[in-house]
Length: 302
Length: 273
Image (cartoon, rainbow over all chains, first blue to last red):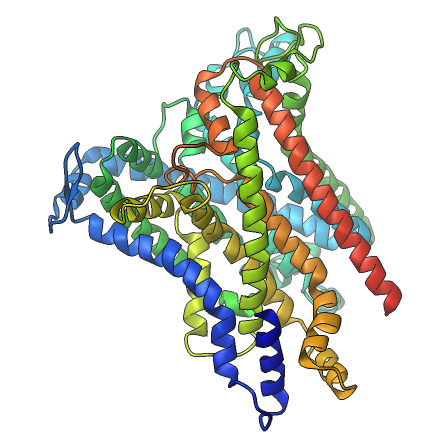
């Protein structure tokens, strides 16, 4: 299929007089596998969730219906609102931290490392953990933060604290720490990308015009880094808003998130209730993404 | 003056970067060390002797869940996702070189597939399979769920690659009398090969570690991440760390092999040109 498709595409591109399938048809054929996969495993499931969110259910099964009960139940409960507030809190804190850390890491790599080889090596050092298991990386905090973990035993040995700090593990602090640990790379990569594309003569020009280091950073580099920051923000915000495992594992079940609430409903087979929550969560997340996209056109940035 | 400032900035940022790398790797190395905990040791430091006890424990079937079988499932699934990811992303990348009706929509749907919360996709596919009376399994519903996560990465990478791909090479090949297939096979493919390996690596590792989308779609048999996720709540011995060490080393090996292949390809290209 690749052969046919490409051959047609190239012929059609340069010599339309030859016998060849029209370009648009070739493009469609090439896009077909993607369309089919996303159609069946992405579009259809989302539509189904939307439909099922209006259905009735009991312990035995789902019944097609048109009820708004699932929505009024979830939106009418203060638990839902509290959970949303909690999720938004995690998202805001994680977003701010990953943005600041991600920017400075990317800035260091892009402007202070002189050779391309060294840049690539250091960038890979940052990227490799991202390609390993999230759950293992969460678990890895247990020996560090636990009651008898590294941090507590070190602080006690140094005589800084008399007894172990309890809130290091299984707390909101642990959740945020793990989220930053897991997601900062999503910020580093796109910001690094945009920083690398900044024309160095712009910075020279700013310096020649007498700008100080901070002025260059604030007036030249930061505005040009915005697209990367926006793309990183989309990743971090959507990942944290949808998180259930980090919250569950790192808070030891003491904290809640919207996705965790959904997961619990799913394990009780309350699919329509979970679907209603899914629709609400989806709308919230898409609104956040739309707000970020107002800053940047991602198609131009690739 | 300005030079002095720059060096100070460099040292501050270098220290910050070092801390960041320690933050990334520190906890992982704690797991690595603790997996060699003696038979009487617990989940935290200090080491109570050094042994391979927990690694042996890991491979005894009765001790923990069926680790071997779930590993084989995750490995197979990762390979399936990798192959499909490379082919579909390459084709889509070629398609996006031309404007076609709906290309913008397709692009945004692809991005949306990345942005929509994993658990929603998991729930949706689960319900679709239930309503159609299909049995969810890791190789059908789980496979599709993984593709909704890995394909957007693949397509975006190919999109970026072809955005920077000069058509001059293809024109030159054509002027020299190459057939379209020869042009693709001997000009385009070698040039984008490193990116394709990158797409494959992403496909494999993302699938191998994915579990939010697998949660509702894996059916009766667990993939490895689901197995580990289950273990976090009911396993309280360092066997958990042994499993962590084994899977992390496996991931590292895959990444290093892929990087080595990319490096070799780049070298060969540099030699030719």
